[in-house]
Length: 506
Image (cartoon, rainbow, N blue to C red; front, side, top):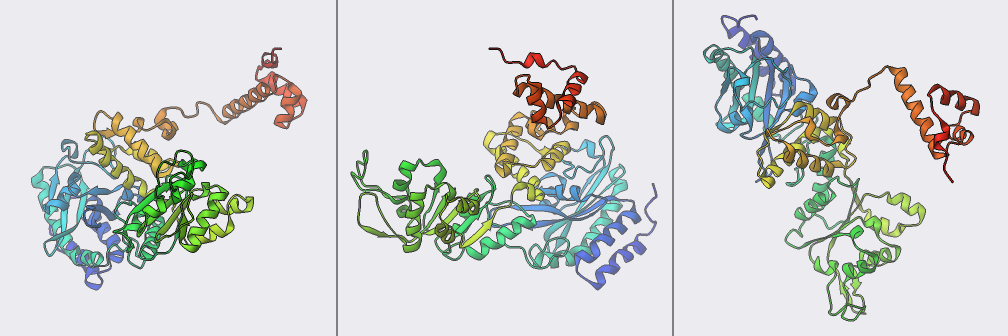
């Protein structure tokens, strides 16, 4: 290990030079962190910045740039204020020195960058501007007593002070994305989580349309958070003080849906013992959220179209016209265009609903948000179930990010709740996740033979399935597999299969 320079001044001068010509972090961070690592034998040097959220939503520390970390490790470097050593430095404004990370339970290794069994020291200092902590600067080094590490801490404090003006300039632009993409980020609705480009586009559209009374159609797969967007649209509108009425149309039987939406008078049908307001009347002056609007029956579609066109309705059993003053937000996970082609959804209703469409991306298209969501769910289920889960292990993180999430955010939420309940050491490990998330490496079920062995196994399975489906009829099985009867016979003999055992008994 090369010792630090006897005098740090030449190195500090070299570090400071880029900052004298520009305050653009994107230009100076990479060279500065690399020089800091090489000149002072520091490893995995990282700058974390505080992300300011809406009032009451707390703050998050995210790695802005690093030297010696992979992009995946950078994405995993997120800490709540006060969480782990990095979070505590940001919360307290005091530097922290950990001579040996294995001996300090506060160390989280959130990035998962350290090799198991390799000891390290960890140094972390605040980046402070005008008494306010805007981030942290941290690095690893070979373990050493605190007295030996103290000069390096002083060095990081000086470098953090040098970075202060550039960090303050970045903070003043309110979250310009790392990498230098222009423009400020749209404000994130309080209940929604995600910093990916796909979600930023959603936030922009929500911010644009929320103040108006425009009808909005939310598109996307089930479990992508359409109800949260409806909440954000209502809270951002001039109707926020009015009611928000939510209706899951797929959950209502056809016989009751008209009454639920438009209300009924006493005696309108058997069991109607008194007059009742429908959901549209209950939403007067506010917003109505029509979830799964693609499940409406054709007759109900006609009645809904009238409400959209004329802003009036009539209760069942009444001829009295009632004016409707509601903002309509509809949602569907179905392909409405295909339904129009099939004649199961009215084109005129589609055009009335599709005034301002917003597409919610599936979780597989916003993988940068998976860890943010997982951490949020861990904290939520800790409170709900009285648990103290502190972190997600690196193998479990890899499994979460590798999975394709057909059930989207809802499936992730269920997986994390299961894991929180299963863990006994306050850490979510890979074996706490459902079987559908297990990888071959994690479960020990990888291929046991070469390519030919695997191909033979697949061929044998296909032969058995075909013979089972055809009751042992070799000719029919050959046609099913699109091979000749001769080839079928040769393959059956090769794999030692007895077709007779599949014959159906009379």
